[in-house]
Image: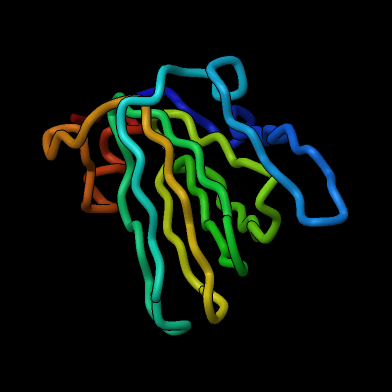
Length: 138
């Protein structure tokens, strides 16, 4: 299974600054894949935990539209914590990366842009299974 923390990258979302408020624009060339699913997390309690899975094929972009939250990324060998708190900064997560989201601030909104529609078979929801797949044991 591919995917390591070196494949994680950030994208600057183009924005138009205006004294009346900023406008961020996501058009076809901004995200490095065709978007097939959009969803967002909101009203997440500060002590709640989201994610806790990896994907076999799906690629994902996360954006903190409001507030902040931490994204814990794990490639089976290394872990990294990234705080998202700017609506014009997007985190690109490739396939084969375990992700957990926590420490949601009050009023935070996490936007997810995904390369595929929902498919339960694409999810790896057990961490030990994820590690076995990364090692080629499964």
